[in-house]
Image 1 (spheres, helix red, strand yellow):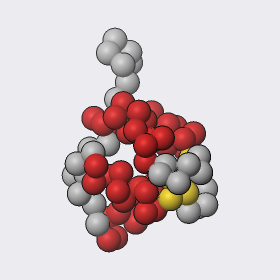
Image 2 (tube, helix red, strand yellow; image 1 turned 135 degrees about the horizontal axis):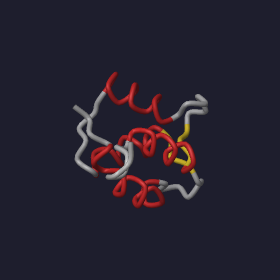
Image 3 (cartoon, rainbow, N blue to C red; image 1 turned 90 degrees about the horizontal axis):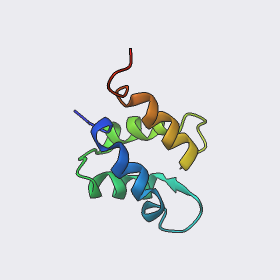
Image 4 (cartoon, helix red, strand yellow; image 1 turned 90 degrees about the vertical axis):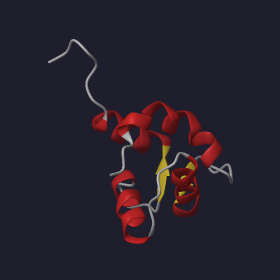
Length: 82
């Protein structure tokens, strides 16, 4: 299972490193390399599906705002809430 929730801080902290062309967003190629770098072994259809989840507007690129919003939604609530 892909556990991005546990890697929330790592994912957000590494975003700029993943944006290897300095465009301000992460394309599919950069995303694939980034997932491998944080230890998530996703390939083929699994990688495509994961990328689509992080690219809700279908632009073919993930910007920081999209990534941050989706990761926060996936993260467990802070202790003492709910």
